[in-house]
Each structure stands twice: as structure tokens, then as C-alpha cells.
Amino acid sequence: MRIALLAGLALIAAPMLEGQSLASKIDRVKDGTVRLSFPAREGVCGNGRGNISTHSKGSRGEWEHDCESGPVRVVIERTGGRSTDLRTYVGGQWRGEATVDLGTVEPKEASDWLFALAEKGERASEDAVFAGTLADGVETWPALLRIARSERAGRKTQRSAIFWLGQAAGEAATKGLDSIVQDDNGDREVRESAIFALSQRPREEGIPALIRVARNSQDPKLRKTALFWLGQSEAPEAVALFEEILTEN
Image (cartoon, rainbow, N blue to C red; front, top):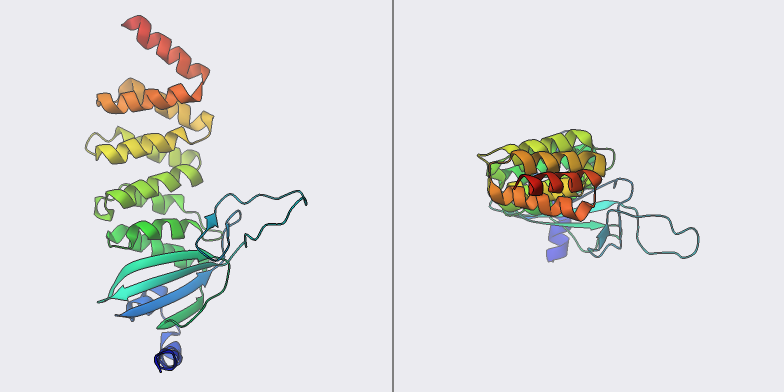
């Protein structure tokens, strides 16, 4: 009876949801489960059971893996009009029923909603960051940078945004990470996460930014963290900086 009731509710709700924004459709569900799908960006694959890779590469025809290239599937638990839990899968197929199944939605609209949820600082915010980065054809770094700077989002969500910012963005995002580190009013743990993200960027982007931190930061711990990651890089510029510091002292 429960499955039949849920299926009936979904059929009734479907016509009412047409023409509404994704946010409005989700907000209509005060208590229950909402699920949706959207195309995954290149390089993302999964086995439909929660194992997701963001660096899928070809196998040269030597072997075949069971990592499917999409779609991204998101399950949102709603309680009291809030999104209290969010689970993400790639590949596979749905089982059972949901209060509302929104079907396949546009990647940009899904990503926008997920990043907006991340900024709210709710229980599902940290998980929403990762899901938002998986959408096909979406430039994610502006939203990730906004979340990284948002105190409302919460420290864990900020750190998650900074990690994916460092993984996904190019030179423009590196400038943004640099500005987060240099913000003397920012949270130290968030700034340390930004330093780590800079260390993961291509050498021509990350090394100069880390050197600026090591030279200019007013926080000794942040300078020490930047120097640590410079030491891991083995970059000639880093060696020159170490020599400069040591000979001055």
C-alpha cells in the first residue's frame, strides 16, 4: 500500500510541477524523498552503488571496467521543508519509489540548485558541493569560489568547495584561492585549505601563489604551511626561496 500511495502521489504531483523552477519543485516537498538525474561531465563515472570516479581514463582496449559515465543521480531527503540529507550516485538505475521523481533535469539548473543549497549551511550542504561539480558542461569555479568565501556555508562546506576549486579550476580560480589565503580576517583552517588547494594546481599557477604566501603572509603558521608544500614541489623557484630565507637568517 505504501508503494502504491507514493506512486499515486507522484502521478498527481507531476502535472503540478510543470513550468516551475527546480527549486520550487523541490520546495513543494515538505517531508519525503525527491530524486533527480542529470548528465555527468566528462571523466566522471560510477558503478551505481556510491563509488564515483572523477578521473575516468581509457583502458587502451586491454580491459573493460564497470564504471558507467552517467547519469548523475541525486536523492534529497526533505524534513520540515528543509533538505536534511543528500546522496549522490553515478550510473546504475533507480529502485523503489520516491515521493517525487523529477526525472532528468538540465545540468546547469541542477548544479545551480546544489550550490545554492551548499551556501545555506544546512545539514546536506557539504554533500551538495561534490554533487554540483559533476554536472556536464557547467563552469563550476565561480560558484565554488563564492561558497569558499561564504561564512554562512560553514567551515566543512567551505573546505570542500576549496578542494574542488583547486581540482577543477584554472588560472582564474587560482587567483581566487590566493585572495582567500591573503585575507587576514578569514578563518585560519579555511585559509590552510586554500594553501593545500594551491599546492595541487599546475606548477605554473600554484608555485608563484605559494611563494607569495610564504613571503607576505602575516600569519607564521600559514607561511610555514606554504613552505611545506613548496618543499614537496621540488620546484627551482622554491629552492631559490629557501636559500634566500636561510641566508637572510
